[in-house]
Image (tube, rainbow, N blue to C red; front, side):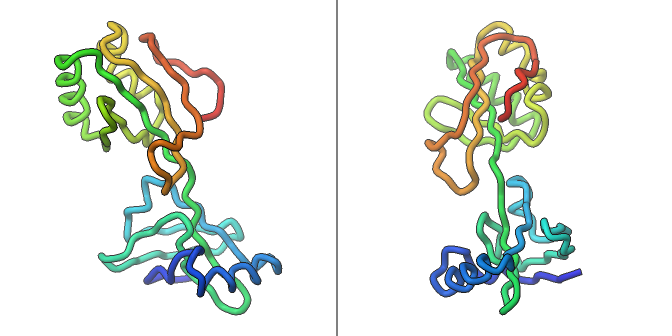
Length: 177
């Protein structure tokens, strides 16, 4: 098991990117996929695509991020890849609906962000489970719902896909989000 106690830098750093480029040509860059929700963790166990087990224990002032270089030498490198993060976009129809939605999201301890008049909830599980908790608000059309995939590290305006929902029943559409 390889122990990682700090982030060496970003794959975009000029001092690092040149070495990574050479290693990529030789197949020497291994990737560890970290779920977006786990990027803020400082201690975790992970396995790279190549099978290398990692014990990551970062100091308080460091965080993982998409493109973080965890290891590099003359033979190989290990780089973090963070995938897309899924968000539930909730648009209340009135101030009263917004207050109730805010109460529900806070009571359920959901991780949220605000954009204009919409509340975005980070989905760390199935969309159906989140929508079931808001069934009354969705079913009565007091809030509009959309599922939004966002690449990690991008601005919230850069959405890769969205499926809008304006009806009450939790369900699956069969398309990838």
